[in-house]
Structure formats: C-alpha cells, structure tokens
Length: 125
Image (cartoon, rainbow, N blue to C red; front, side, top):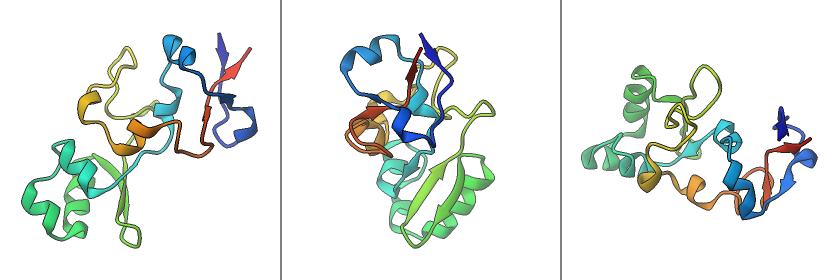
C-alpha cells in the first residue's frame, strides 16, 4: 500500500485523514520523539522528586539506561531513543503503542503538530 517514506521530503507526505490509521504501519513513530519532563513523569520514567530536580542528572541516568538519545538544556527537551530499526522504543512487534494511555503530548496531538501539521509521513503507491 505504501512505499518507503522520505521523512525529510515533507512535500511527499499525505494529507491526513483518519482512514490512514486503519492500515497504520506506525511511520509517524519513526520520527524523532521529543518529550518534556512532564511526559517522562507520565510515562513513569522519572519520579516526582526528579521532576523537580536537576534535568541534567535525569538526562544522564536515562541516557545510561538507553531510554533517551540526548537532552537539550536550552529547551529542556529530551529525545527518546529509538530501536535499531528506527521505530519508537514504545512500539511492540505489531507496531502498536505499549504506552498509549500515557503517551507523550506530541503523540497525542499528531498530526496537528509535527514537522508538517495536518499531514502523515506515508507515500502512496
């Protein structure tokens, strides 16, 4: 149904419509996932004490555990690590979200927000 996607070529993304989700292959879950400390707390990755503490210490611990790729202090955003295949850490082998009820804000609001608001990163044949 869909070819390989070029995430950098936003003009190839398809105008979002809910029916695209019916045959979802979780292509949006291959985009870098930036989260804030509230997302990390909701996901259960940091404690309430860490929520109020040093984000650099939190970042170091999460990076050591392989849960984040990096942390940008200027924006206070963490980039969640990805699996070897480039997919989100929280996807199961059927490409379903294992943390759906606790998912980060950006996931909740996609595709309203993202690299190309209103569009999905899939290319039709």
